[in-house]
Length: 439
Image (tube, one colour):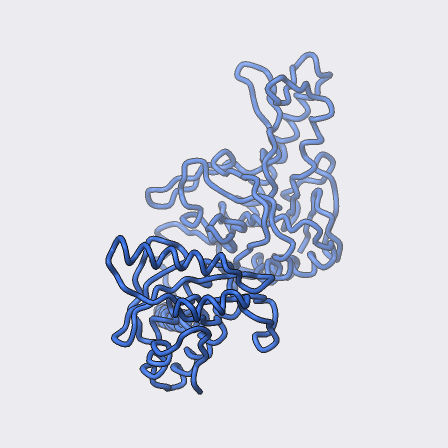
């Protein structure tokens, strides 16, 4: 395998390093790897910066620069087309945010940007159409939320190794067509933006990979090299004419059956994985009583815990409070979260105001229950007081119940282990002031 890296600081065997203007013909290599980051330097130092922020060149006044740029990018684009359409090679592009480019004045004017070397191609998939290079958009967006979708792809090890370094741009299509209709999305971020794409073009393929800034050159090539070699080793192009399917060899039908069986098995395993994940989530929500992701998560965990103890849980239209009803007792539950110090009396006053509102406006008699969590970063067994002494005195005076989130967690754990939730509900109904489960 002969590979050429342009502007990409890779290091290792079977690799030639060059810059974009002076490199040999791109079609003379098996694989070409391009980082477009430095391409705008071909025109930015010499072009006129217009008031609208765009770079402009005026033929006849630029000492031949615009003509040289047009010739260079046209030449490289044709070489890329030969690499893909005639040689079946691989083009690897490091995804960077597209620059504004340069506008070469003329009739008509022509615009060049850092991705103008991409091949001219018209890709059609059902009702969708993707025209290269203008049909692709490279939008600036930074993050480290790289989610690998194609774990069996030859370049999946490269994506996994450097995913923590993050990306600088995402891929979209100009007309809104899904990129998955034209190629395989290898990775995306948490909101579904494509980050890595394997796009068949002609007899070859274009691979768009996240920038992974800071990736060490030798380590990167050690993972890219076998992946690209595996792609080049495929004897057939990714797409084929319609007539090609009429020439099956003995044994191909059996292989197709095995692929279909494997697909069904994958679907079954995917459903099973979803079931296990759902069961895991049902348990993990109770752990938010110990260490929640903020107050909202603590409220959700409290609602789930009371429901698991056999209470009916109802809304109040107030984000930190809810109604928990049972035949033993009805409670107005207020969730108090104080990360650094014991819960103060302002939470007690807020609970009293809610109780008065229910009694006077809705004629509803319930008891107050204040669920407290303080110092969640500490082991529950080593935490200090969960509420101030004034809150405890007020709870006895007002006959409402004080419950620590850890004690509620312990109660739920006992129910999950087989304990009768009725006994816990009775214990809560009989309590005044601080409550602990009876184990």
